Length: 297
Image (tube, rainbow, N blue to C red; front, side):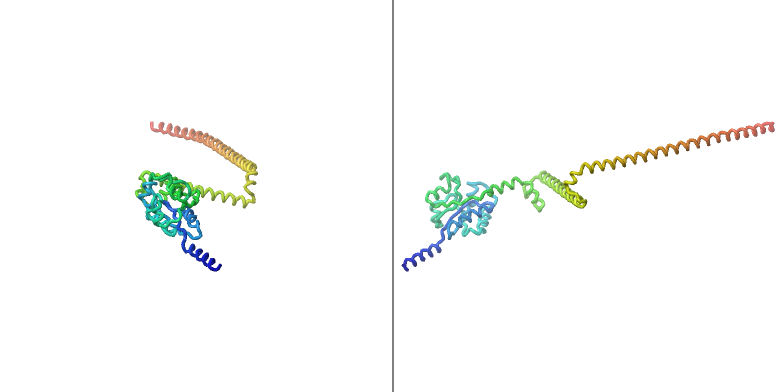
Protein backbone atom coordinates (compact mmCIF):
# COMPACT_ATOMS: atom_id res chain seq x y z
CA UNK A 1 0.00 0.00 0.00
CA UNK A 2 2.81 2.29 0.88
CA UNK A 3 4.64 1.49 -2.37
CA UNK A 4 1.49 2.32 -4.35
CA UNK A 5 1.15 5.72 -2.61
CA UNK A 6 4.80 6.48 -3.26
CA UNK A 7 4.33 5.59 -6.92
CA UNK A 8 1.30 7.88 -7.22
CA UNK A 9 3.18 10.73 -5.52
CA UNK A 10 6.13 10.16 -7.87
CA UNK A 11 3.88 10.22 -10.91
CA UNK A 12 2.15 13.35 -9.65
CA UNK A 13 5.49 15.05 -9.05
CA UNK A 14 6.68 14.03 -12.49
CA UNK A 15 3.59 15.52 -14.08
CA UNK A 16 4.11 18.75 -12.17
CA UNK A 17 7.73 18.92 -13.27
CA UNK A 18 6.85 18.40 -16.92
CA UNK A 19 4.38 21.10 -18.05
CA UNK A 20 2.18 20.63 -21.07
CA UNK A 21 3.75 22.39 -24.02
CA UNK A 22 1.04 24.37 -25.82
CA UNK A 23 1.68 26.25 -29.04
CA UNK A 24 -0.27 29.21 -30.40
CA UNK A 25 0.60 31.20 -33.50
CA UNK A 26 -0.47 34.25 -35.46
CA UNK A 27 0.56 37.59 -36.93
CA UNK A 28 -0.16 39.67 -33.82
CA UNK A 29 -0.09 43.02 -35.63
CA UNK A 30 -1.03 45.99 -33.42
CA UNK A 31 -1.05 43.69 -30.40
CA UNK A 32 -4.25 44.27 -28.38
CA UNK A 33 -6.20 42.77 -25.50
CA UNK A 34 -8.02 40.37 -27.83
CA UNK A 35 -4.66 38.76 -28.60
CA UNK A 36 -3.79 38.71 -24.89
CA UNK A 37 -7.06 37.03 -23.93
CA UNK A 38 -6.61 34.26 -26.48
CA UNK A 39 -3.10 33.63 -25.14
CA UNK A 40 -4.47 33.67 -21.60
CA UNK A 41 -6.93 30.93 -22.54
CA UNK A 42 -4.12 28.88 -24.08
CA UNK A 43 -1.99 29.35 -20.97
CA UNK A 44 -4.84 28.14 -18.72
CA UNK A 45 -5.75 25.04 -20.75
CA UNK A 46 -3.86 22.92 -18.21
CA UNK A 47 -2.81 23.46 -14.59
CA UNK A 48 0.82 23.49 -15.65
CA UNK A 49 1.28 24.93 -19.13
CA UNK A 50 4.34 26.12 -20.98
CA UNK A 51 3.08 28.44 -23.70
CA UNK A 52 5.05 28.84 -26.91
CA UNK A 53 3.88 31.52 -29.30
CA UNK A 54 4.92 31.53 -32.95
CA UNK A 55 4.89 34.71 -35.01
CA UNK A 56 5.34 34.79 -38.79
CA UNK A 57 7.98 37.10 -40.24
CA UNK A 58 7.27 39.95 -42.66
CA UNK A 59 8.11 37.99 -45.81
CA UNK A 60 5.65 35.18 -45.08
CA UNK A 61 2.97 37.52 -43.73
CA UNK A 62 3.07 39.92 -46.68
CA UNK A 63 2.97 37.00 -49.08
CA UNK A 64 -0.02 35.17 -47.62
CA UNK A 65 -1.95 37.86 -45.73
CA UNK A 66 -0.85 41.37 -46.66
CA UNK A 67 0.95 44.42 -45.33
CA UNK A 68 1.26 44.94 -41.59
CA UNK A 69 1.50 48.12 -39.54
CA UNK A 70 4.25 46.77 -37.24
CA UNK A 71 7.30 45.03 -38.63
CA UNK A 72 8.35 41.57 -37.49
CA UNK A 73 10.75 42.78 -34.75
CA UNK A 74 8.07 45.02 -33.26
CA UNK A 75 5.56 42.17 -33.30
CA UNK A 76 8.03 39.76 -31.64
CA UNK A 77 8.77 42.32 -28.95
CA UNK A 78 5.06 42.92 -28.26
CA UNK A 79 4.60 39.20 -27.60
CA UNK A 80 7.59 39.04 -25.27
CA UNK A 81 5.94 41.61 -23.03
CA UNK A 82 2.72 39.61 -22.66
CA UNK A 83 2.50 38.02 -19.21
CA UNK A 84 1.03 34.75 -20.53
CA UNK A 85 3.82 34.00 -23.01
CA UNK A 86 6.72 31.79 -21.91
CA UNK A 87 8.60 31.65 -25.20
CA UNK A 88 8.38 33.42 -28.56
CA UNK A 89 9.22 31.50 -31.72
CA UNK A 90 10.14 33.94 -34.52
CA UNK A 91 9.89 33.06 -38.21
CA UNK A 92 7.02 30.68 -37.48
CA UNK A 93 5.71 28.61 -40.42
CA UNK A 94 2.40 29.47 -42.05
CA UNK A 95 1.21 25.86 -41.71
CA UNK A 96 2.06 23.71 -38.70
CA UNK A 97 3.59 20.37 -39.67
CA UNK A 98 4.57 17.23 -37.75
CA UNK A 99 8.20 18.15 -38.19
CA UNK A 100 7.59 21.49 -36.49
CA UNK A 101 5.71 19.81 -33.63
CA UNK A 102 8.54 17.37 -33.08
CA UNK A 103 11.22 20.06 -33.23
CA UNK A 104 9.64 22.10 -30.43
CA UNK A 105 8.13 19.13 -28.54
CA UNK A 106 4.64 20.63 -28.84
CA UNK A 107 1.81 18.69 -27.22
CA UNK A 108 -1.14 20.82 -28.38
CA UNK A 109 -1.89 23.73 -30.69
CA UNK A 110 -4.34 26.33 -29.38
CA UNK A 111 -6.34 28.64 -31.62
CA UNK A 112 -9.93 29.64 -32.33
CA UNK A 113 -11.85 27.06 -34.33
CA UNK A 114 -12.59 29.19 -37.39
CA UNK A 115 -11.03 27.63 -40.50
CA UNK A 116 -8.17 29.67 -41.94
CA UNK A 117 -7.62 29.15 -45.64
CA UNK A 118 -4.26 27.64 -46.44
CA UNK A 119 -2.80 30.12 -48.91
CA UNK A 120 -0.05 27.64 -49.83
CA UNK A 121 -2.63 25.43 -51.53
CA UNK A 122 -1.90 22.45 -49.26
CA UNK A 123 -5.36 22.42 -47.70
CA UNK A 124 -8.53 24.32 -46.81
CA UNK A 125 -7.41 25.05 -43.26
CA UNK A 126 -3.93 25.78 -41.93
CA UNK A 127 -4.81 23.72 -38.84
CA UNK A 128 -6.24 20.80 -40.80
CA UNK A 129 -3.36 18.48 -39.95
CA UNK A 130 -3.31 19.39 -36.24
CA UNK A 131 -7.05 18.81 -35.97
CA UNK A 132 -6.77 15.45 -37.74
CA UNK A 133 -4.20 14.11 -35.23
CA UNK A 134 -6.19 15.33 -32.21
CA UNK A 135 -3.74 17.97 -31.03
CA UNK A 136 -5.94 21.02 -31.49
CA UNK A 137 -7.38 22.97 -28.54
CA UNK A 138 -10.00 25.62 -29.17
CA UNK A 139 -9.87 29.15 -27.74
CA UNK A 140 -12.55 31.83 -28.05
CA UNK A 141 -12.18 35.11 -29.91
CA UNK A 142 -12.93 38.39 -28.14
CA UNK A 143 -15.80 40.11 -29.90
CA UNK A 144 -15.52 43.77 -30.81
CA UNK A 145 -11.75 43.96 -31.11
CA UNK A 146 -9.35 42.98 -33.87
CA UNK A 147 -6.43 44.40 -35.79
CA UNK A 148 -8.73 45.07 -38.73
CA UNK A 149 -11.16 46.97 -36.48
CA UNK A 150 -8.34 49.16 -35.16
CA UNK A 151 -7.12 49.96 -38.66
CA UNK A 152 -10.70 50.77 -39.70
CA UNK A 153 -11.02 53.23 -36.82
CA UNK A 154 -7.83 54.97 -37.92
CA UNK A 155 -9.07 55.19 -41.51
CA UNK A 156 -12.46 56.47 -40.38
CA UNK A 157 -10.91 59.25 -38.27
CA UNK A 158 -7.96 59.77 -40.60
CA UNK A 159 -8.25 63.56 -40.82
CA UNK A 160 -8.32 63.97 -37.05
CA UNK A 161 -5.21 61.84 -36.58
CA UNK A 162 -3.40 63.75 -39.33
CA UNK A 163 -4.34 67.08 -37.73
CA UNK A 164 -3.25 65.85 -34.30
CA UNK A 165 0.18 64.85 -35.62
CA UNK A 166 0.56 68.12 -37.52
CA UNK A 167 -0.02 69.97 -34.25
CA UNK A 168 2.58 67.73 -32.57
CA UNK A 169 5.27 68.82 -35.02
CA UNK A 170 5.08 66.31 -37.86
CA UNK A 171 5.34 67.80 -41.34
CA UNK A 172 2.85 67.16 -44.11
CA UNK A 173 5.60 65.26 -45.95
CA UNK A 174 6.05 62.95 -42.96
CA UNK A 175 2.33 62.18 -43.12
CA UNK A 176 2.10 62.01 -46.91
CA UNK A 177 -0.35 64.91 -47.06
CA UNK A 178 -0.53 67.47 -49.88
CA UNK A 179 -0.19 71.21 -49.30
CA UNK A 180 -3.85 71.83 -50.21
CA UNK A 181 -5.10 69.09 -47.90
CA UNK A 182 -3.00 70.40 -45.02
CA UNK A 183 -4.51 73.88 -45.40
CA UNK A 184 -8.01 72.44 -45.66
CA UNK A 185 -7.51 70.39 -42.50
CA UNK A 186 -6.18 73.37 -40.58
CA UNK A 187 -9.13 75.49 -41.70
CA UNK A 188 -11.59 72.78 -40.65
CA UNK A 189 -9.85 72.46 -37.32
CA UNK A 190 -10.16 76.22 -36.83
CA UNK A 191 -13.91 76.04 -37.48
CA UNK A 192 -14.20 73.13 -35.08
CA UNK A 193 -12.44 75.05 -32.30
CA UNK A 194 -14.69 78.04 -32.99
CA UNK A 195 -17.81 75.86 -32.67
CA UNK A 196 -16.48 74.44 -29.41
CA UNK A 197 -15.94 77.95 -28.02
CA UNK A 198 -19.44 78.99 -29.06
CA UNK A 199 -20.86 75.87 -27.43
CA UNK A 200 -19.01 76.62 -24.20
CA UNK A 201 -20.33 80.18 -24.23
CA UNK A 202 -23.86 78.86 -24.74
CA UNK A 203 -23.41 76.52 -21.80
CA UNK A 204 -22.18 79.42 -19.66
CA UNK A 205 -25.19 81.51 -20.65
CA UNK A 206 -27.48 78.59 -19.84
CA UNK A 207 -25.86 78.25 -16.43
CA UNK A 208 -26.29 81.96 -15.73
CA UNK A 209 -29.95 81.80 -16.73
CA UNK A 210 -30.50 78.94 -14.32
CA UNK A 211 -28.71 80.90 -11.60
CA UNK A 212 -30.93 83.92 -12.23
CA UNK A 213 -34.01 81.71 -12.13
CA UNK A 214 -32.94 80.18 -8.84
CA UNK A 215 -32.16 83.61 -7.42
CA UNK A 216 -35.61 84.81 -8.36
CA UNK A 217 -37.06 81.74 -6.67
CA UNK A 218 -38.51 80.42 -9.88
CA UNK A 219 -37.69 77.12 -11.54
CA UNK A 220 -37.59 76.61 -15.28
CA UNK A 221 -41.13 75.19 -15.41
CA UNK A 222 -42.48 78.30 -13.70
CA UNK A 223 -40.71 80.48 -16.23
CA UNK A 224 -42.35 78.54 -19.03
CA UNK A 225 -45.78 78.61 -17.39
CA UNK A 226 -45.59 82.36 -16.76
CA UNK A 227 -44.06 83.17 -20.13
CA UNK A 228 -47.32 84.58 -21.56
CA UNK A 229 -47.91 86.78 -18.54
CA UNK A 230 -44.32 88.03 -18.52
CA UNK A 231 -44.38 88.82 -22.22
CA UNK A 232 -47.74 90.57 -21.93
CA UNK A 233 -46.44 92.65 -19.03
CA UNK A 234 -43.38 93.60 -21.02
CA UNK A 235 -45.48 94.62 -24.01
CA UNK A 236 -47.78 96.63 -21.77
CA UNK A 237 -44.82 98.46 -20.28
CA UNK A 238 -43.39 98.96 -23.74
CA UNK A 239 -46.72 100.32 -25.02
CA UNK A 240 -47.01 102.69 -22.07
CA UNK A 241 -43.47 103.88 -22.63
CA UNK A 242 -44.15 104.47 -26.32
CA UNK A 243 -47.33 106.40 -25.47
CA UNK A 244 -45.46 108.64 -23.06
CA UNK A 245 -42.70 109.17 -25.58
CA UNK A 246 -45.23 110.03 -28.29
CA UNK A 247 -47.00 112.50 -25.98
CA UNK A 248 -43.70 114.15 -25.07
CA UNK A 249 -42.69 114.46 -28.72
CA UNK A 250 -46.09 115.95 -29.63
CA UNK A 251 -45.91 118.49 -26.79
CA UNK A 252 -42.38 119.42 -27.82
CA UNK A 253 -43.46 119.98 -31.42
CA UNK A 254 -46.45 122.09 -30.36
CA UNK A 255 -44.24 124.17 -28.10
CA UNK A 256 -41.80 124.67 -30.93
CA UNK A 257 -44.60 125.76 -33.26
CA UNK A 258 -45.95 128.25 -30.70
CA UNK A 259 -42.48 129.70 -30.24
CA UNK A 260 -41.94 130.08 -33.95
CA UNK A 261 -45.38 131.70 -34.40
CA UNK A 262 -44.73 134.23 -31.63
CA UNK A 263 -41.34 135.05 -33.10
CA UNK A 264 -42.93 135.61 -36.51
CA UNK A 265 -45.55 138.00 -35.11
CA UNK A 266 -42.95 140.03 -33.27
CA UNK A 267 -40.77 140.22 -36.35
CA UNK A 268 -43.68 141.43 -38.50
CA UNK A 269 -44.41 144.25 -35.99
CA UNK A 270 -40.81 145.32 -36.05
CA UNK A 271 -40.86 145.52 -39.84
CA UNK A 272 -43.93 147.84 -39.79
CA UNK A 273 -42.22 150.28 -37.42
CA UNK A 274 -39.08 150.33 -39.48
CA UNK A 275 -41.01 151.18 -42.64
CA UNK A 276 -42.56 154.29 -40.98
CA UNK A 277 -39.21 155.47 -39.74
CA UNK A 278 -37.70 155.12 -43.17
CA UNK A 279 -40.49 157.19 -44.71
CA UNK A 280 -39.92 160.03 -42.28
CA UNK A 281 -36.19 159.83 -42.80
CA UNK A 282 -36.43 159.94 -46.54
CA UNK A 283 -38.89 162.92 -46.33
CA UNK A 284 -36.42 164.88 -44.27
CA UNK A 285 -33.63 164.16 -46.70
CA UNK A 286 -35.70 165.24 -49.60
CA UNK A 287 -36.62 168.50 -47.86
CA UNK A 288 -33.03 169.23 -47.01
CA UNK A 289 -31.97 168.49 -50.50
CA UNK A 290 -34.68 170.67 -51.92
CA UNK A 291 -33.72 173.65 -49.84
CA UNK A 292 -30.07 173.15 -50.70
CA UNK A 293 -30.83 173.24 -54.37
CA UNK A 294 -32.64 176.52 -54.01
CA UNK A 295 -29.81 178.23 -52.20
CA UNK A 296 -27.25 177.15 -54.81
CA UNK A 297 -29.16 178.79 -57.53
